[in-house]
Length: 435
Image (cartoon, rainbow, N blue to C red; front, side):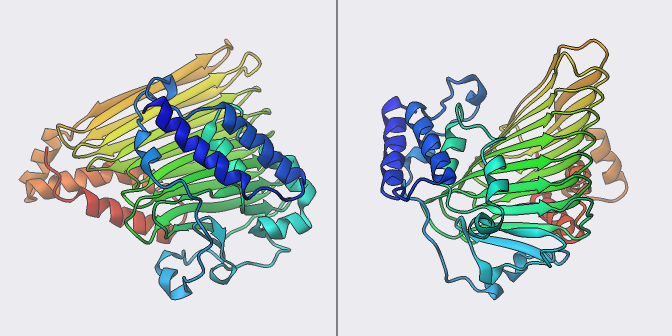
């Protein structure tokens, strides 16, 4: 990517912002203004940057620079196949804008969910104390752009000592071509709360566009959250996402991330165990083919003692697709008695598929138990032969083994209807693979 093209792209965004941001400066608009100031001092990452050396995003600079506009033509029947039957609360955003007519809410006394305009009226001080506190934008141009162009947000507050049995569905639907959408989520778990939410990105059209999303999660003492993230956008789309999680004393965060769509996708997940006895389990699966590129960067940061983290990331790569995984675990000097493990397992389904994986450990404490490992390989020929000896064709044998490899992650999704949908998707995509 040339510096000129990248600069032109950011210049156009800066000009676009200036025509829409002349409201009186509240704390939120001040946050936006700080973010756009950081955009003006940064540049788009290139393959010369270490954290982006496998991911070339120069193609997105050739798209239109316009932000998506509100879209009001969708009806419930147009998207009913996307709803989750277990979810009593669904927040639907179309091209980044909240759609109240497509959304459903439970009793606010049980669970507080809504969008930005609603929560600014009722929880302004809470939002001010959390917005922009976890995903930093001082050295992250995409997080800065999301914050600068912030117009709406999916919000969940799980009340103190309350367990929410049903999942909350945060559904982000893309319908427009050659635009940029800026979805945002903020999830707050009060002390002793327990919540499950699904962050779901889908497209109704096979077209080119950009999704630039930010999710911030704050769990107070002994709070629990299960976060299922599904990226199944258009195969021509560009999906750039940042998620940051802050874990207080005794809190527990469980994440399952599935990446299926987009021409180029990049997901940055940063989890900080900021107090003692916090736990996290991070599972991920990328299933890509054709010329897709899926890049996942994670950082699990143990700051205080007695933290536990478990991570398993899998990639299934076919055709000329390229998967990237970089997983870093940091154990700070005061984080004694940390117990952490990380596994990167990768499956190549063609001779032209490519995987770059880099698990990392940075340990600054001496009383810890940490392990990591990575494997890259093909389907086991002996296992294929065994299944053939039981009467299956070679194609069926390959499909079943590939499906089993991915199903280990999908089976950890606690929402039955979504788990079945994704299992069928994986099965459909793995049929007839040949190496």
